[in-house]
Length: 195
Image (cartoon, rainbow, N blue to C red; front, side):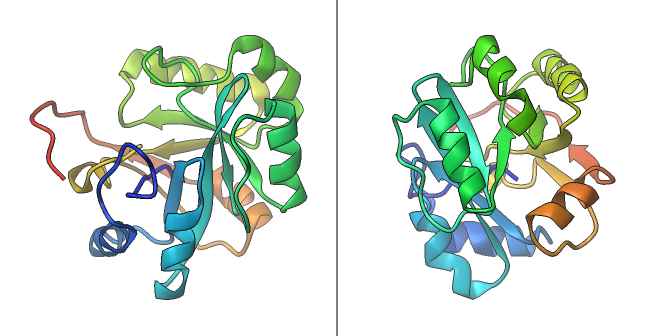
């Protein structure tokens, strides 16, 4: 539910290669959530099931919009970004909410948006277990659906974290079925960066 491609400034893997790798691993649909753009996801929509997402930098930090039809401009207030996501029928996904090494929303902003947050990432493949446990507590407090993602920026990271769930039809059905999903995560491995 949280994967990047070369449309993001910090990834070199072309969206077609991301799509192929996800399919090889049996991960479908493919969720692409690039930084401040939906271009990569739009580029591969005709290849098969793709959920168009965007990791949007707001004035208060990052949040993800899922099930988008167009990009949300960077630099808006978090409140304005959420309104634009919802206007598209999209879902608001709060990623890596406590990771000090990742850009995220501050506590005050999370409180002000509490009723609009649909999914909290309770397992991020780049965050440590303690931070992920804190995210689980936040998810419960917000009564949001529990999400998870590898936050992959390289092919080898794809599939390190994923959610096993029933097939769904659209954003609202996704939310219902996500609540019954099962998160799978393998421990992080540190090593040299490779594409």
